[in-house]
Image 1 (cartoon, rainbow, N blue to C red):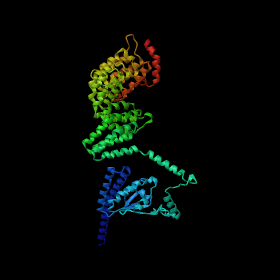
Image 2: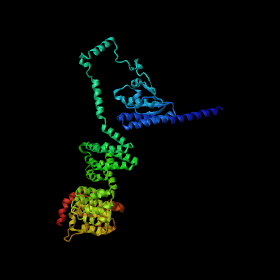
Image 3: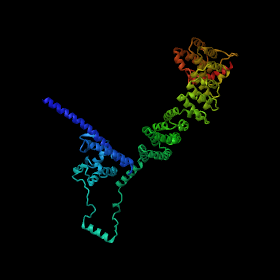
Image 4: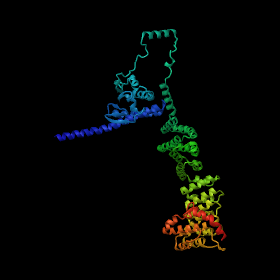
Length: 600
């Protein structure tokens, strides 16, 4: 019997606890609705529709609460509100903490009763919003003087430890405390004039140092307040309302506001406006709203893109995330401006993030960057070619071929590099032509592109260039790149020509320059065949230090598998130091032997 009673009591306690938890959630929602109503009254001027909206939502919550509870009685802690020992509000203690505003003035309990929404609730919100914590306004005195019927408070004497009493408002204050006061008042009424006596000590009415410090702090707080940010949030709140005419008005205001923010380089607020407008437009799902936002962003895209050109200029360092978000939100009309501006951004990390955002924008609007390939500005056309390569835009290959024939070095090189990345045979003829380009960097880019694309007849063309007498006039890095590329493409078929360059003699008996022979030795190491090894062993005892050292390195490469040799075949920027183990040997040998070889 005892066990059954215990089980029944335990079950009843569980049900009560679950019910209280559900009621606590209802009270918490009501408190949150009250906070929104208070904040809207503090933020917006009287008559703003948002004030009415949040107040109506609070009344709806209270109506639901009265169905379950006789009142809402909240215990007030330093930074919390409790209902039946359950926390329904908690924030860090700060002057604007809702609970702390009551707590600091000694108020320990706040109760809202049914019927409060019939008039007292609006007045209570107004009084609370009007009291300013920074000015130590006495909330207790304000509420006690009003004597609400449906809003009840309980307070403690916060000064009782000092033996002093809490000051209470005096309803007869100013009525004249003595007979002398009354006599003076009557004399003034009869004469109709007031005579002011000069104070004996001017210092009695002058501001003291504490007052001056207080005023200074208040001025600093006011000047530091982000007014533009507050205005921006208010406009976005207005845009969120279901009123199409109001949304059009907000967009018209933003058309005037955004250029000012751009002129002031206010990156954060511009990014906030752009991103929030897009989110709100997508949230509504209304075509008219989305067209409004798209129209605004289209009109402002070019101007907003200009912001990128001043990044890091004159000490400006806006947030990279903000800039990337802004670029990602722009419309296609901004692409030409961004293509010009982003390469000039000094900070590499910022530049790379912006380039990623630009690439995403171009992928959605490829026609704009294709048009830029024909731009008269060579830098603009070259940057467009780089973007085409980065995003793999194969439809632009014919335009890259045209770009490779322009007279400017920067455009030809960018076109060749993009064709190499795309790896298509469409530009094979342009790549072959570029092998004889006047520009050294363009020739090297063309060689690398040919290795990537591997067009038909490429190895024969490289063999013809390597076998020409003027090939020795090219610097060591270029000779190395050409010979290695030839070794990769031709394989064992490259050995006869490379062996001839390494070990052969010219018709008058002289050998080629040591650097050229060293390049041939390294290329034979790339081939890695027995015939290539045999050709290298013949030159193992060569007297020219660059050749001897290059042969030694090439023979060592035979210990690697073919994949490792091919991976290292074409270096991005070879120089003479890549030819030998000790660069000093090369420098000395070039200086000492070039004349000797020429004389022999």
